[in-house]
Length: 620
Image 1: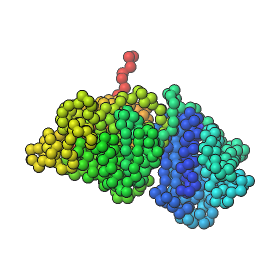
Image 2: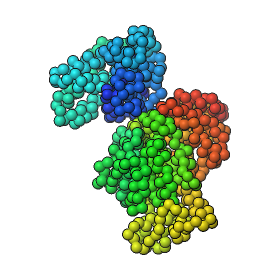
Image 3: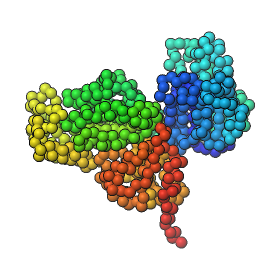
Image 4: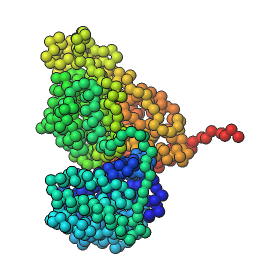
């Protein structure tokens, strides 16, 4: 196993245990250490919906997977090279994800009869041959941790909580990662409780020392890896929720406008509210409403008053907001709605990921109520996508939906910190001293009306959800006028396409197979296409940020390919949109397991559909 790991320039590690074992914290600290070591990273937090499921049960397992290394990393990895399992349930849940030859580090002290029974295991997998296909490292983490923290006088419960740092120390040693950042975090986090601080520091050091001194080099050895070839700029690790919040703040600065963020807690969208709270000095105010409808209506009220209203939710909450979205369309007000998609209808699987709200975003309102729809492709891409969504909302005076998902929101990657001065300012249609005309005289290039706000005596107007006269804004039930207003709302969204950049090929060759994706499938498609090109297949990767309207050249671009494959985490929603809008034939790769798309399954679909690339004849 040592030789197998040493031959790789990237590794996939998965930490797994109970929800109360500090697994997510452990993974986050290892991510920071990997980034500081100069490695590219991509992570997958994977945890149950229950706040604290019964300890030791299969459905209470929390996990954190990370791929890191000296090459470009775009996914958290299909399967772990190393699994650290804190109890029988964590082992049982994650064993199906392993490939033969993987290294399994287990806390053997946790494999008691009681815990085996709680995990529904009839026999001990450490003894019954279950782990024969793997390299197994049995370490009594619980006991060794208790010995390390004993001098600090903690109770048994608090002492046991330090074991995540003991295991972290061991894995940091294993991959030659620095401990300084984790030690600094512990010192800062527990500055007010010296006993807890010192115990966690001791556990971290003890795990690291165990790796140095344990006579297990045939299984457990050090595997240093090279730095990734990253650009010489300043980086930080960022989750999708963090990048999205920073993008919203930046958009407010670029537009020189205050933002009111209105939300109601729902998994996995709540993180956005958490990150934006307390940013008053950056021009962002937050409001937690009593329900989803109140949240979006408050955001619309903010936009009516001259601020930019922003609201967020997940699929079930967005369903409740749809009537208010129609009001924003009818009133021609800017609004940003973020949908952090999650798995399933109704309550579904709140902490699992899916891309199944595209129909809802593009089609899901009463009457003809089109909206622009955008989607970032990774955590870091949330930053520019948020800015672009706000730019469209203010340029065209329309609500805009931004589709992220649970994977993007919670996952993290390296983000090259941009210079905000290099980003084009965002203009709006607020009246200036030189502005003339009525607010319903729309800009012919954007079809946006003036953004006149209450208190401006020059632009007194009536506004609401009842159909209005296209010229005066007064209530109108005239048949021809309703036709004209319906056409206007459609044409306004079509005008958005006039400002979109041309769709390009991310990588690959023209002709052959086009693999078209959107949102969080980017990383898996990118790597699968990269590998398939090396295998000599005629394949290209086309990834969409703009989902409604589609980029104006997309039809012509796809017409240059023999076949089109659309992988997505639903039953075929983008495939339907492409057939609807472009009349293109589409092959589908669909997955609805609550887990991200993998490189292997994407490569398999490509291999089935793509032809070998025709190589140019040599000059000889």
